[in-house]
Image (tube, rainbow over all chains, first blue to last red; front, side, top):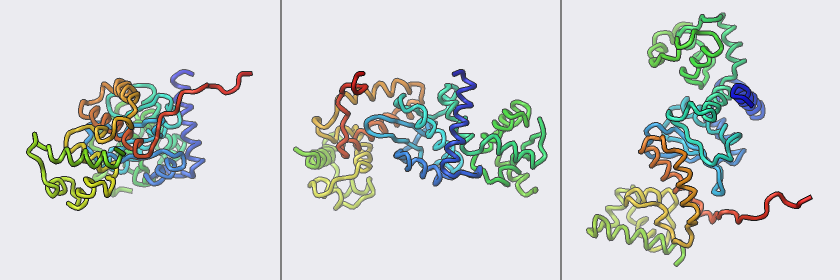
Length: 194
Length: 130
């Protein structure tokens, strides 16, 4: 299987997991993921000690299948990390350990987990449907659009995740949104505009 | 010596020898761990078994491995090798995160000891041959 097919397969898996567990909106909560973890017997260890860049780690061996999560993460990054680690449960259990920080995100297995997580929270088809409702065409997505989309759908996919999706699906030119680091500022500017 | 007695003796030993033998009162340790002095006393007499999270906190306070709280006969030596192998795959992590990952892996081992989990014995794979 080539890289692209691998990623498409992970997106299909994410949609199957959504269907199986009744996730119908782009607002996936930690409680939804806890329920999925429970059903698969995955133990969550909320790690209260200081971590620099590490957000989560998945380990599966004779001691069980466990996910360490950095405690105190805000809702969106926590949901994304839990979704990311869920991919390791479904596809990478034989690797023993997977960890998630900024240093290894370019690895196919980790990139795949990011793609799985983004699709699990907000499937591409739903995103396309919502962009169509907002009458946003090719290369027309602006920061304001994503603020409106996030507030309207109440999605738990972060602005960074939405920006990647918008660019990848052709709604914005490359790097026009993903380079933005100040989404809260845009939210305060555009948040009241409907 | 069983697990409970070993834990009790280890906690007492670490407390008494804290800071190069200067020692620490049960009250002081209790304040650091945010538990009552009675709890420390009960851990040290083997009346209560500290939770694995309590043992983790104790190990951090005394600056020792959580595994050192357990009798050697309950510690699977093969898991040391597993742990080294696991951490080799995570070498690119920030050193502080790598250290936390190591502590987490040891925490899992400690919990496994508490739960009586053992490594499955190697056996024949693949079932019956056709």
